[in-house]
Length: 74
Figure 1 (cartoon, rainbow, N blue to C red):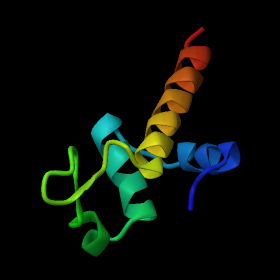
Figure 2: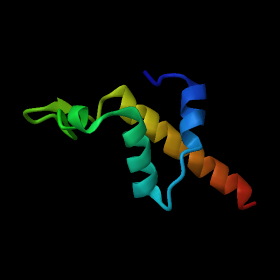
Figure 3: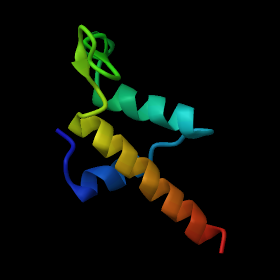
Figure 4: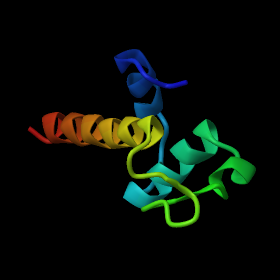
């Protein structure tokens, strides 16, 4: 399970040409397609993805990547 700052930092190294491709690459690393089929965003008839630790990790990763980009643009 991904839960620490170091795990988020490792995921920050995952590339992508934009937000969507970066997010998809992270999801491919963290969960399989079979497990992904058990989720939807709000949890209607499935598990709610918006409140999972995986989503929080992905969000933290994107925020970290955004901070790095802003620092490098200075």
